Length: 459
Image 1: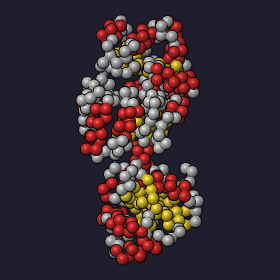
Image 2: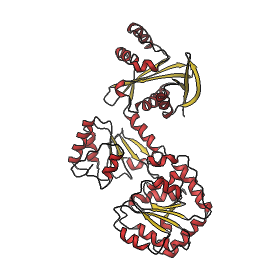
Image 3: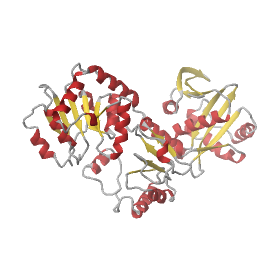
Protein backbone atom coordinates (compact mmCIF):
# COMPACT_ATOMS: atom_id res chain seq x y z
CA UNK A 1 0.00 0.00 0.00
CA UNK A 2 2.72 2.47 -0.95
CA UNK A 3 1.85 5.81 -2.57
CA UNK A 4 -0.52 5.06 -5.46
CA UNK A 5 0.46 5.74 -9.06
CA UNK A 6 -0.90 8.85 -10.77
CA UNK A 7 -4.67 8.64 -11.29
CA UNK A 8 -5.22 5.54 -9.15
CA UNK A 9 -5.90 7.47 -5.93
CA UNK A 10 -8.64 9.61 -7.47
CA UNK A 11 -10.23 6.58 -9.13
CA UNK A 12 -10.35 4.72 -5.79
CA UNK A 13 -11.98 7.70 -4.09
CA UNK A 14 -14.41 8.23 -7.00
CA UNK A 15 -15.62 4.66 -6.47
CA UNK A 16 -16.52 5.52 -2.88
CA UNK A 17 -13.63 3.83 -1.07
CA UNK A 18 -11.56 5.32 1.75
CA UNK A 19 -7.84 5.26 1.06
CA UNK A 20 -4.90 5.00 3.41
CA UNK A 21 -1.33 5.14 2.16
CA UNK A 22 1.77 3.71 3.80
CA UNK A 23 5.17 5.36 3.62
CA UNK A 24 7.25 2.19 3.56
CA UNK A 25 8.87 -0.14 1.05
CA UNK A 26 6.15 -2.52 -0.23
CA UNK A 27 6.59 -5.93 1.36
CA UNK A 28 8.91 -4.67 4.10
CA UNK A 29 8.42 -5.35 7.84
CA UNK A 30 7.47 -1.66 8.25
CA UNK A 31 4.81 -2.07 5.57
CA UNK A 32 3.43 -5.16 7.32
CA UNK A 33 3.27 -3.40 10.71
CA UNK A 34 1.46 -0.41 9.23
CA UNK A 35 -0.95 -2.66 7.34
CA UNK A 36 -1.78 -4.57 10.52
CA UNK A 37 -2.36 -1.34 12.43
CA UNK A 38 -4.82 -0.08 9.81
CA UNK A 39 -6.53 -3.48 9.67
CA UNK A 40 -7.21 -3.51 13.41
CA UNK A 41 -8.08 0.18 13.56
CA UNK A 42 -10.82 -0.39 10.97
CA UNK A 43 -12.03 -3.61 12.57
CA UNK A 44 -11.60 -5.27 9.18
CA UNK A 45 -12.51 -8.90 8.56
CA UNK A 46 -10.08 -9.54 5.69
CA UNK A 47 -6.78 -8.18 4.42
CA UNK A 48 -6.33 -8.59 0.66
CA UNK A 49 -2.69 -8.77 -0.45
CA UNK A 50 -1.77 -8.50 -4.13
CA UNK A 51 1.76 -8.07 -5.44
CA UNK A 52 4.95 -9.96 -6.26
CA UNK A 53 6.86 -8.13 -3.52
CA UNK A 54 4.78 -9.71 -0.74
CA UNK A 55 6.71 -12.72 0.48
CA UNK A 56 5.92 -15.63 2.78
CA UNK A 57 7.53 -13.67 5.61
CA UNK A 58 5.23 -10.72 4.93
CA UNK A 59 2.18 -13.00 4.96
CA UNK A 60 3.27 -14.51 8.26
CA UNK A 61 3.85 -11.13 9.88
CA UNK A 62 0.35 -9.97 8.91
CA UNK A 63 -1.22 -13.33 9.78
CA UNK A 64 0.44 -13.42 13.21
CA UNK A 65 -1.32 -10.15 14.04
CA UNK A 66 -4.64 -12.08 13.89
CA UNK A 67 -5.53 -10.72 10.44
CA UNK A 68 -7.31 -12.98 7.95
CA UNK A 69 -5.59 -12.84 4.55
CA UNK A 70 -6.80 -13.28 0.99
CA UNK A 71 -3.61 -13.55 -1.07
CA UNK A 72 -3.96 -12.86 -4.79
CA UNK A 73 -1.40 -14.84 -6.78
CA UNK A 74 -0.49 -15.51 -10.42
CA UNK A 75 1.91 -18.41 -10.52
CA UNK A 76 2.93 -19.59 -7.04
CA UNK A 77 5.79 -17.12 -6.58
CA UNK A 78 6.03 -17.48 -2.78
CA UNK A 79 8.05 -20.29 -1.21
CA UNK A 80 5.34 -20.82 1.42
CA UNK A 81 1.72 -19.73 1.97
CA UNK A 82 0.15 -18.93 5.33
CA UNK A 83 -2.84 -16.86 4.11
CA UNK A 84 -6.30 -18.22 4.86
CA UNK A 85 -7.12 -18.08 1.16
CA UNK A 86 -5.10 -17.93 -2.04
CA UNK A 87 -6.82 -16.71 -5.20
CA UNK A 88 -5.36 -17.55 -8.61
CA UNK A 89 -7.93 -16.80 -11.31
CA UNK A 90 -5.81 -17.99 -14.19
CA UNK A 91 -6.82 -20.77 -16.54
CA UNK A 92 -3.53 -22.52 -15.79
CA UNK A 93 -3.91 -22.36 -11.98
CA UNK A 94 -3.29 -25.71 -10.30
CA UNK A 95 -2.92 -27.01 -6.76
CA UNK A 96 0.63 -28.18 -7.47
CA UNK A 97 1.69 -24.50 -7.48
CA UNK A 98 0.83 -24.37 -3.77
CA UNK A 99 2.10 -27.62 -2.31
CA UNK A 100 4.12 -25.68 0.27
CA UNK A 101 1.28 -24.19 2.30
CA UNK A 102 -0.27 -24.42 5.74
CA UNK A 103 -2.91 -27.13 6.09
CA UNK A 104 -5.74 -24.63 6.59
CA UNK A 105 -5.09 -22.63 3.39
CA UNK A 106 -8.11 -22.62 1.06
CA UNK A 107 -7.33 -22.41 -2.65
CA UNK A 108 -9.60 -20.52 -5.05
CA UNK A 109 -8.21 -21.62 -8.40
CA UNK A 110 -9.19 -21.16 -12.03
CA UNK A 111 -11.49 -19.06 -14.16
CA UNK A 112 -14.53 -19.78 -11.99
CA UNK A 113 -13.00 -17.09 -9.78
CA UNK A 114 -12.07 -14.64 -12.55
CA UNK A 115 -12.57 -11.08 -11.25
CA UNK A 116 -14.47 -9.41 -14.06
CA UNK A 117 -14.87 -5.68 -13.51
CA UNK A 118 -18.34 -4.37 -12.73
CA UNK A 119 -18.54 -2.34 -15.96
CA UNK A 120 -18.63 -5.59 -17.94
CA UNK A 121 -21.51 -7.20 -16.05
CA UNK A 122 -24.14 -5.14 -17.88
CA UNK A 123 -23.28 -7.38 -20.85
CA UNK A 124 -24.00 -10.61 -18.95
CA UNK A 125 -26.42 -11.78 -21.69
CA UNK A 126 -24.75 -10.04 -24.62
CA UNK A 127 -25.13 -11.91 -27.92
CA UNK A 128 -22.31 -11.09 -30.29
CA UNK A 129 -23.08 -10.74 -33.99
CA UNK A 130 -20.08 -11.81 -36.06
CA UNK A 131 -19.39 -9.96 -39.28
CA UNK A 132 -18.70 -12.10 -42.34
CA UNK A 133 -15.53 -10.08 -42.83
CA UNK A 134 -14.17 -8.59 -39.61
CA UNK A 135 -12.99 -4.99 -39.87
CA UNK A 136 -13.08 -3.55 -36.36
CA UNK A 137 -9.88 -4.27 -34.40
CA UNK A 138 -9.17 -3.33 -30.78
CA UNK A 139 -5.52 -3.19 -29.67
CA UNK A 140 -4.58 -2.90 -25.99
CA UNK A 141 -1.37 -3.78 -24.13
CA UNK A 142 -1.89 -2.21 -20.73
CA UNK A 143 -0.80 1.02 -19.15
CA UNK A 144 2.92 1.23 -19.90
CA UNK A 145 3.77 -1.43 -22.53
CA UNK A 146 7.55 -1.16 -21.94
CA UNK A 147 8.38 -3.56 -24.80
CA UNK A 148 6.34 -1.42 -27.21
CA UNK A 149 4.25 -4.33 -28.42
CA UNK A 150 1.65 -1.75 -29.44
CA UNK A 151 4.11 -0.19 -31.88
CA UNK A 152 4.99 -3.56 -33.42
CA UNK A 153 1.30 -4.46 -33.82
CA UNK A 154 0.52 -1.08 -35.39
CA UNK A 155 3.34 -1.56 -37.91
CA UNK A 156 1.90 -4.95 -38.85
CA UNK A 157 -1.66 -3.61 -39.10
CA UNK A 158 -0.55 -0.89 -41.50
CA UNK A 159 0.52 -3.66 -43.87
CA UNK A 160 -2.91 -5.31 -43.91
CA UNK A 161 -4.29 -4.50 -47.35
CA UNK A 162 -7.91 -3.94 -46.34
CA UNK A 163 -8.86 -0.34 -47.01
CA UNK A 164 -11.90 -0.08 -44.74
CA UNK A 165 -10.37 -1.42 -41.53
CA UNK A 166 -11.34 0.49 -38.38
CA UNK A 167 -8.66 0.15 -35.70
CA UNK A 168 -8.73 1.52 -32.16
CA UNK A 169 -5.45 1.46 -30.24
CA UNK A 170 -5.71 1.99 -26.48
CA UNK A 171 -2.51 3.51 -25.12
CA UNK A 172 -1.91 3.96 -21.41
CA UNK A 173 -0.97 7.36 -20.00
CA UNK A 174 2.38 5.95 -18.88
CA UNK A 175 3.27 4.54 -22.30
CA UNK A 176 6.80 5.88 -23.04
CA UNK A 177 6.32 5.47 -26.80
CA UNK A 178 3.19 7.57 -27.15
CA UNK A 179 4.71 10.28 -29.36
CA UNK A 180 6.24 7.64 -31.62
CA UNK A 181 2.87 5.86 -31.89
CA UNK A 182 1.07 9.03 -32.92
CA UNK A 183 3.74 9.75 -35.51
CA UNK A 184 3.49 6.24 -36.96
CA UNK A 185 -0.22 6.49 -37.79
CA UNK A 186 -0.27 9.93 -39.41
CA UNK A 187 -0.36 8.40 -42.87
CA UNK A 188 -3.08 5.82 -42.02
CA UNK A 189 -6.54 7.18 -41.23
CA UNK A 190 -7.80 3.66 -40.39
CA UNK A 191 -6.07 3.81 -37.00
CA UNK A 192 -7.09 5.87 -33.94
CA UNK A 193 -5.24 6.13 -30.63
CA UNK A 194 -7.29 6.76 -27.49
CA UNK A 195 -6.33 7.18 -23.83
CA UNK A 196 -7.97 7.28 -20.40
CA UNK A 197 -10.49 4.65 -21.42
CA UNK A 198 -13.30 4.18 -18.89
CA UNK A 199 -15.58 2.17 -21.17
CA UNK A 200 -13.50 -0.81 -22.28
CA UNK A 201 -16.55 -3.07 -22.19
CA UNK A 202 -18.30 -0.83 -24.74
CA UNK A 203 -15.20 -0.90 -26.92
CA UNK A 204 -15.26 -4.70 -26.82
CA UNK A 205 -18.89 -4.70 -27.93
CA UNK A 206 -17.84 -2.56 -30.88
CA UNK A 207 -14.86 -4.70 -31.92
CA UNK A 208 -14.77 -7.78 -34.13
CA UNK A 209 -11.44 -8.99 -32.73
CA UNK A 210 -8.95 -7.91 -30.08
CA UNK A 211 -5.16 -8.00 -30.02
CA UNK A 212 -3.89 -7.87 -26.44
CA UNK A 213 -1.50 -9.15 -23.79
CA UNK A 214 -2.04 -12.41 -21.92
CA UNK A 215 -3.13 -10.80 -18.65
CA UNK A 216 -6.53 -10.11 -17.12
CA UNK A 217 -7.80 -8.47 -20.33
CA UNK A 218 -7.94 -12.00 -21.79
CA UNK A 219 -10.69 -12.95 -19.33
CA UNK A 220 -12.65 -9.79 -20.11
CA UNK A 221 -12.45 -10.66 -23.80
CA UNK A 222 -13.63 -14.17 -22.95
CA UNK A 223 -16.59 -12.84 -20.97
CA UNK A 224 -17.54 -10.65 -23.94
CA UNK A 225 -16.99 -13.46 -26.45
CA UNK A 226 -14.52 -11.28 -28.32
CA UNK A 227 -12.08 -13.40 -30.40
CA UNK A 228 -8.58 -12.43 -29.37
CA UNK A 229 -5.00 -12.76 -30.52
CA UNK A 230 -2.98 -12.78 -27.31
CA UNK A 231 0.73 -12.22 -26.73
CA UNK A 232 2.62 -13.15 -23.55
CA UNK A 233 4.46 -9.95 -22.62
CA UNK A 234 5.63 -11.34 -19.25
CA UNK A 235 6.94 -14.73 -18.17
CA UNK A 236 3.87 -15.49 -16.04
CA UNK A 237 1.59 -14.90 -19.05
CA UNK A 238 3.11 -17.69 -21.13
CA UNK A 239 1.18 -20.54 -19.41
CA UNK A 240 -2.04 -18.53 -19.84
CA UNK A 241 -1.47 -18.05 -23.55
CA UNK A 242 -0.43 -21.70 -23.95
CA UNK A 243 -3.60 -23.01 -22.29
CA UNK A 244 -5.99 -20.54 -23.89
CA UNK A 245 -4.72 -21.41 -27.35
CA UNK A 246 -4.61 -25.15 -26.59
CA UNK A 247 -8.33 -25.30 -25.81
CA UNK A 248 -9.25 -22.99 -28.67
CA UNK A 249 -10.24 -19.96 -26.60
CA UNK A 250 -7.79 -17.60 -28.28
CA UNK A 251 -5.07 -17.43 -30.91
CA UNK A 252 -1.47 -17.52 -29.71
CA UNK A 253 0.07 -14.29 -31.01
CA UNK A 254 3.42 -16.03 -31.27
CA UNK A 255 2.04 -17.86 -34.32
CA UNK A 256 1.58 -14.50 -36.09
CA UNK A 257 5.00 -13.18 -36.92
CA UNK A 258 5.04 -9.47 -36.11
CA UNK A 259 8.74 -9.24 -37.00
CA UNK A 260 7.89 -10.15 -40.59
CA UNK A 261 5.10 -7.63 -41.12
CA UNK A 262 4.03 -9.10 -44.48
CA UNK A 263 3.70 -12.60 -43.03
CA UNK A 264 1.92 -11.29 -39.93
CA UNK A 265 -0.45 -9.17 -41.98
CA UNK A 266 -1.31 -12.17 -44.16
CA UNK A 267 -2.10 -14.35 -41.14
CA UNK A 268 -4.25 -11.63 -39.61
CA UNK A 269 -6.12 -11.11 -42.88
CA UNK A 270 -6.99 -14.81 -42.87
CA UNK A 271 -8.57 -14.53 -39.42
CA UNK A 272 -10.51 -11.41 -40.41
CA UNK A 273 -11.95 -13.27 -43.39
CA UNK A 274 -12.82 -16.48 -41.52
CA UNK A 275 -16.15 -15.95 -39.76
CA UNK A 276 -16.40 -19.66 -38.83
CA UNK A 277 -13.07 -19.54 -36.96
CA UNK A 278 -14.05 -16.41 -35.06
CA UNK A 279 -17.47 -17.82 -34.12
CA UNK A 280 -15.88 -21.03 -32.81
CA UNK A 281 -13.38 -19.10 -30.68
CA UNK A 282 -16.10 -16.78 -29.38
CA UNK A 283 -18.35 -19.64 -28.24
CA UNK A 284 -15.50 -21.33 -26.39
CA UNK A 285 -14.56 -18.05 -24.72
CA UNK A 286 -18.11 -17.41 -23.47
CA UNK A 287 -18.23 -20.91 -22.00
CA UNK A 288 -15.04 -20.17 -20.03
CA UNK A 289 -16.14 -17.06 -18.09
CA UNK A 290 -19.65 -16.42 -16.75
CA UNK A 291 -18.98 -13.23 -14.78
CA UNK A 292 -19.76 -14.71 -11.35
CA UNK A 293 -16.17 -15.02 -10.19
CA UNK A 294 -16.25 -11.99 -7.89
CA UNK A 295 -19.44 -13.27 -6.22
CA UNK A 296 -17.80 -16.66 -5.69
CA UNK A 297 -14.81 -14.98 -4.05
CA UNK A 298 -17.08 -12.86 -1.84
CA UNK A 299 -19.05 -15.91 -0.81
CA UNK A 300 -15.82 -17.73 0.01
CA UNK A 301 -14.68 -14.80 2.15
CA UNK A 302 -17.87 -14.67 4.14
CA UNK A 303 -18.05 -18.45 4.47
CA UNK A 304 -14.39 -18.54 5.45
CA UNK A 305 -14.87 -16.63 8.70
CA UNK A 306 -17.68 -18.91 9.92
CA UNK A 307 -17.67 -22.23 11.69
CA UNK A 308 -20.47 -24.13 13.38
CA UNK A 309 -21.10 -25.98 16.61
CA UNK A 310 -24.21 -27.65 17.98
CA UNK A 311 -26.37 -25.61 20.32
CA UNK A 312 -25.97 -26.34 24.04
CA UNK A 313 -27.80 -25.62 27.30
CA UNK A 314 -25.73 -22.52 28.03
CA UNK A 315 -27.05 -20.92 24.80
CA UNK A 316 -30.60 -20.60 26.16
CA UNK A 317 -30.37 -16.91 27.08
CA UNK A 318 -28.40 -16.04 23.95
CA UNK A 319 -31.05 -17.59 21.68
CA UNK A 320 -33.82 -15.94 23.73
CA UNK A 321 -32.32 -12.53 22.96
CA UNK A 322 -31.94 -13.35 19.27
CA UNK A 323 -35.46 -14.60 18.66
CA UNK A 324 -37.05 -11.65 20.47
CA UNK A 325 -35.15 -9.06 18.48
CA UNK A 326 -37.85 -6.78 16.96
CA UNK A 327 -36.54 -7.27 13.41
CA UNK A 328 -36.55 -11.06 13.79
CA UNK A 329 -40.09 -11.03 15.15
CA UNK A 330 -41.23 -8.82 12.25
CA UNK A 331 -39.86 -11.32 9.69
CA UNK A 332 -41.28 -14.35 11.52
CA UNK A 333 -44.61 -15.97 10.66
CA UNK A 334 -45.65 -15.47 14.31
CA UNK A 335 -44.70 -11.93 15.26
CA UNK A 336 -45.66 -11.79 18.94
CA UNK A 337 -42.77 -11.65 21.46
CA UNK A 338 -41.95 -15.02 23.06
CA UNK A 339 -42.07 -15.11 26.89
CA UNK A 340 -38.96 -16.40 28.65
CA UNK A 341 -40.66 -19.38 30.33
CA UNK A 342 -42.24 -20.48 27.06
CA UNK A 343 -38.84 -20.17 25.38
CA UNK A 344 -37.11 -22.22 28.07
CA UNK A 345 -39.66 -25.02 27.80
CA UNK A 346 -39.23 -25.18 24.03
CA UNK A 347 -35.44 -24.76 24.13
CA UNK A 348 -34.68 -27.60 26.57
CA UNK A 349 -37.13 -29.96 24.88
CA UNK A 350 -35.47 -29.17 21.57
CA UNK A 351 -32.03 -30.25 22.87
CA UNK A 352 -33.19 -33.87 23.05
CA UNK A 353 -35.21 -33.83 19.82
CA UNK A 354 -33.53 -36.20 17.29
CA UNK A 355 -35.37 -34.50 14.40
CA UNK A 356 -33.92 -31.08 15.12
CA UNK A 357 -30.36 -30.10 14.16
CA UNK A 358 -29.45 -26.74 15.66
CA UNK A 359 -26.19 -24.91 14.91
CA UNK A 360 -24.64 -21.81 16.42
CA UNK A 361 -22.50 -19.96 13.87
CA UNK A 362 -19.28 -18.43 15.20
CA UNK A 363 -16.63 -16.14 13.78
CA UNK A 364 -12.93 -16.98 13.80
CA UNK A 365 -12.67 -15.73 17.40
CA UNK A 366 -15.55 -18.02 18.48
CA UNK A 367 -17.97 -15.13 18.94
CA UNK A 368 -21.55 -16.32 18.24
CA UNK A 369 -22.97 -14.41 15.27
CA UNK A 370 -26.18 -16.29 14.50
CA UNK A 371 -27.95 -19.61 14.20
CA UNK A 372 -29.23 -22.15 11.69
CA UNK A 373 -31.93 -24.63 12.68
CA UNK A 374 -33.05 -27.66 10.63
CA UNK A 375 -36.32 -29.50 11.32
CA UNK A 376 -36.17 -33.00 9.81
CA UNK A 377 -39.17 -34.82 8.34
CA UNK A 378 -38.02 -38.00 6.60
CA UNK A 379 -35.75 -37.08 3.70
CA UNK A 380 -36.74 -33.40 3.89
CA UNK A 381 -35.83 -30.66 6.31
CA UNK A 382 -36.87 -27.07 6.88
CA UNK A 383 -34.25 -24.41 7.56
CA UNK A 384 -34.54 -21.32 9.75
CA UNK A 385 -31.71 -18.81 10.15
CA UNK A 386 -31.00 -15.53 11.89
CA UNK A 387 -28.04 -13.20 12.42
CA UNK A 388 -27.15 -11.29 15.55
CA UNK A 389 -27.99 -7.61 15.01
CA UNK A 390 -24.29 -6.67 15.30
CA UNK A 391 -23.45 -8.75 12.23
CA UNK A 392 -26.20 -7.66 9.83
CA UNK A 393 -25.39 -5.72 6.68
CA UNK A 394 -22.11 -7.57 6.06
CA UNK A 395 -23.41 -10.18 3.60
CA UNK A 396 -22.82 -12.87 6.21
CA UNK A 397 -26.28 -14.33 5.65
CA UNK A 398 -25.23 -15.96 2.39
CA UNK A 399 -22.23 -17.62 4.03
CA UNK A 400 -24.29 -18.73 7.00
CA UNK A 401 -26.95 -20.35 4.80
CA UNK A 402 -24.44 -21.98 2.46
CA UNK A 403 -22.08 -23.32 5.13
CA UNK A 404 -24.83 -24.44 7.50
CA UNK A 405 -26.60 -26.35 4.71
CA UNK A 406 -23.34 -27.94 3.59
CA UNK A 407 -22.57 -28.98 7.17
CA UNK A 408 -26.10 -30.32 7.65
CA UNK A 409 -25.91 -32.46 4.50
CA UNK A 410 -22.55 -33.86 5.64
CA UNK A 411 -23.98 -34.92 9.01
CA UNK A 412 -27.35 -36.35 7.93
CA UNK A 413 -28.92 -38.42 5.15
CA UNK A 414 -31.51 -35.74 4.31
CA UNK A 415 -31.77 -35.08 0.58
CA UNK A 416 -33.74 -31.81 0.42
CA UNK A 417 -33.71 -28.62 2.50
CA UNK A 418 -36.72 -26.31 2.23
CA UNK A 419 -36.80 -22.63 3.15
CA UNK A 420 -40.00 -20.61 3.51
CA UNK A 421 -39.49 -16.85 3.41
CA UNK A 422 -42.18 -14.22 3.80
CA UNK A 423 -42.92 -12.52 0.48
CA UNK A 424 -42.02 -9.13 1.91
CA UNK A 425 -38.57 -10.31 3.06
CA UNK A 426 -36.68 -9.78 -0.21
CA UNK A 427 -33.31 -9.55 1.59
CA UNK A 428 -33.60 -13.12 2.90
CA UNK A 429 -34.95 -14.31 -0.45
CA UNK A 430 -31.88 -12.96 -2.28
CA UNK A 431 -29.55 -14.45 0.34
CA UNK A 432 -31.04 -17.95 -0.14
CA UNK A 433 -30.81 -17.62 -3.94
CA UNK A 434 -27.16 -16.55 -3.73
CA UNK A 435 -26.50 -19.45 -1.35
CA UNK A 436 -27.61 -21.88 -4.07
CA UNK A 437 -31.27 -22.41 -3.23
CA UNK A 438 -33.77 -22.69 -6.09
CA UNK A 439 -37.00 -20.70 -6.24
CA UNK A 440 -39.84 -23.24 -6.15
CA UNK A 441 -42.65 -20.73 -6.43
CA UNK A 442 -45.07 -18.93 -4.12
CA UNK A 443 -46.94 -20.76 -1.35
CA UNK A 444 -49.08 -19.85 1.65
CA UNK A 445 -47.57 -20.44 5.10
CA UNK A 446 -49.71 -19.79 8.16
CA UNK A 447 -51.98 -17.68 6.00
CA UNK A 448 -49.10 -15.55 4.60
CA UNK A 449 -47.77 -15.33 1.06
CA UNK A 450 -44.26 -16.81 1.03
CA UNK A 451 -41.39 -17.88 -1.18
CA UNK A 452 -40.61 -21.61 -1.21
CA UNK A 453 -36.90 -22.23 -1.85
CA UNK A 454 -35.18 -25.58 -2.21
CA UNK A 455 -31.64 -26.90 -1.95
CA UNK A 456 -30.95 -30.54 -2.82
CA UNK A 457 -28.00 -32.69 -1.84
CA UNK A 458 -25.21 -32.66 -4.41
CA UNK A 459 -26.47 -29.60 -6.29
